[in-house]
Image 1: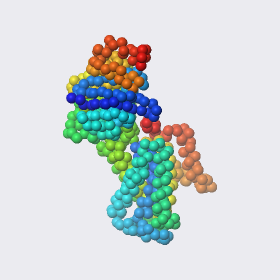
Image 2 (image 1 turned 180 degrees about the horizontal axis):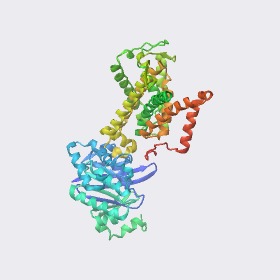
Image 3 (image 1 turned 135 degrees about the horizontal axis):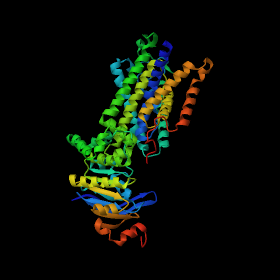
Image 4 (image 1 turned 120 degrees about the vertical axis):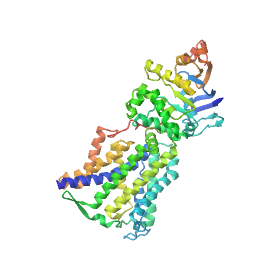
Length: 240
Length: 304
């Protein structure tokens, strides 16, 4: 069943057009990677779905309800949780407070305490330091924290913008291990943006490649590695 | 010993007044990057709300005649209502404009409030006596401390404690602190922008009412400009504390209050009239050394 549908979405910042007619579908339980070179419009796509950046034209639909133009808090309340690029922890708030910011909107209050324990079980180093200000954590720990924070909102779709940005390769492996496990355990729908397509191919799932605000390639990540057009999209030879 | 004690009490009571003002400014700045220069006029409005409209020099106390357990909540409600109304009528329309535009809007709102007061009450300061019994001194370790000063300190500390408990222990307090640090991220976690902002305005308005009550009681006068001085110093306190930092605002308020009192007590007699120049000089030195303020949060950058 289609959870999220984006139709012919165009987004502009002033005279600069970042997305030109993007159409995509995400089914429940699916992993979708959005990859592409720097400046392709990947983050814009996530931010537009989250309601942070206004859509110029086109529509965004969640569960059959049109959410184009809705404020970010309403989209979050429908179950779309975005972990933005650069992690954005609340540095002055403790780890536990960070985890609790997003629970205010939940209707299933009785499940919150249990979810908190399961996030701590997933990320033991967060549990050890639950009263530490989040600003004191390392980059990798902050990445774990924001994933945990998104989980605490009990999302239906979790979107992550460049989870590997600025992290050591070993930490990136850990992050992906956790994402894969979470997906298996919770039937979480994942929308992951990465600049590099190698991760997508290692992890599997469907992949979309964006360049210049357009989708240029789409298919199973493991098939696309053989496609010559992938290199063209990154390095820019051939036509645009 | 008694002189030192007297200075400590003076510093605490003046500092706590400034801290309350700085808090009212910092809370709103935190959630919407607005320096609300109408805050001083909110203070004056709350004081005049206790009086019948008249242009006589002696004030006709009206609401102010109520017993304190009715008067205080009523004034808090008036302050909160005025503040909420100004958000809905004025500031909401400027929410996505740049901070300078919002600041100018707040100046304009301040002018409107001041001139409405002028129309109903004239510019003449009026004398009012709210609680005469508070003027009596109490003996404390040999020092004569006016009862009012003790009450001011206790009320302020109680207000600060309630506010800290609210910010630290409640869901809405947590949402407000998160929004102050990163508003967009908080919204992406389901925190309602309008809710948090209205709440910040309501609390800020109640703080203005509290300051108005304290000022009117201390000075015994109602003056249309009575909030302006507190507002200015409270704003400086938030800058010194680090704009956007709530604990910084409180600390900044107490630091400036203490600095004023200490300069008043220690400067040579001839220099005392220039006390404020020394205080602001110290402020400039602090800002030269730490332009971001003493307790600047990491999030003090502009929101995108």
